[in-house]
Amino acid sequence: MLEDKLDKDIKSALLARDSHKAMTLRGLKATLLNIKVASGKRESGLDDNEVLSAFAKEAKKRQESADLYKQAGDEARAKAELDEKAMIEAYLPEAMSEEDIAKVIDEVIKSLGADSPSQMGQVIGQVKAKLGAAADGSVIARLTKEKLQ
Image 1 (cartoon, rainbow, N blue to C red):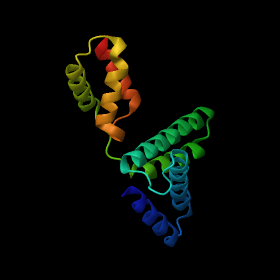
Image 2 (cartoon, one colour; image 1 turned 135 degrees about the vertical axis):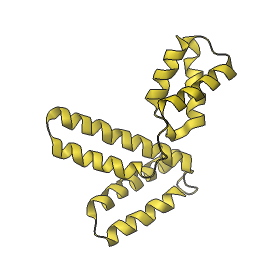
Image 3 (cartoon, rainbow, N blue to C red; image 1 turned 180 degrees about the vertical axis):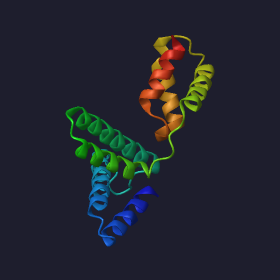
C-alpha cells in the first residue's frame, strides 16, 4: 500500500537526516490526512488509486509553482519546487505517451459510438477511469477534443 511506503520513506529520510525530503513527504502525508477527513475515510483509509490521484495533483501543483517562479526570475525557488515534484513523482506510475493515450481514447470513442463534441465529457470520464494517474487530464482533454471535432 502506498501510504505504508510513504511512512517508511518518511522514517528513512528522518534517519538519514534529510530534512528537505522528510518535510516534503510529511506534507504529502498531511494532504492524505486532509482528504481522508474530508471524505470520511479516516478510519478505513484511502485506496491506492485515491492516493495516486492526490499525489498527481500535488506534483502538478509543484510544476505550476515552479513555472511561476521561473517567470518571476526566481530560479532557486523554481528548482526547489521541481525537486519536490521529483520526490512526489517517484510514487507515481510512469506517465503514458500521447500515442498510448490516443489509442485508449480511440477505443473509448469506438465503444461509446461517440461522434460529436457534446459527448466529450463521457469520453474523458471513461478514459480517466481506465488510465487513472498514468495520464495527465489536460492531455486527455486536448486529444479527445481533437478527435471529436
